[in-house]
Image (cartoon, rainbow, N blue to C red):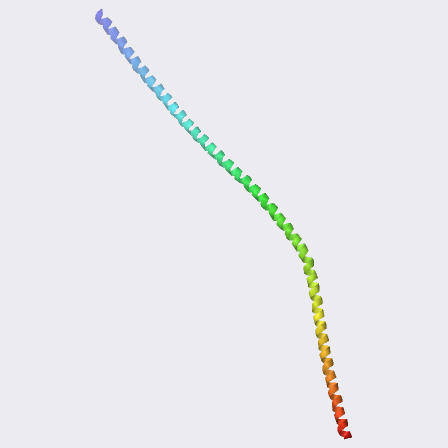
Length: 151
């Protein structure tokens, strides 16, 4: 009787204890797996936050570069306009200087021709004076001879 009942209760308690130990191990395994999944999820979330942060940083950087590019484009357009204006001014200056240069060259050539003609004229005059002086000396010599022969 009683001893069989106690043994039966002990077996039942042992079975329950084994079932409880087994259930506890299963719970620990399930909780461990769940914890591992949560850690992986947290890691992925952190990776996502990091990626999201990097994406925000890259977007800000891109926007800054975009602004700089726009600023440089405006500066280049201004410089291009300035260069075109300078080129037009230079063309106008060249156009105004070329006829003056041509006119100056022509005047210089004419002055050189006049100087040459004046030098030739001076040479001709000098030659004429020298010829006249020789003729006068010859006439004077003739007059002297004639006075000497008459005297």
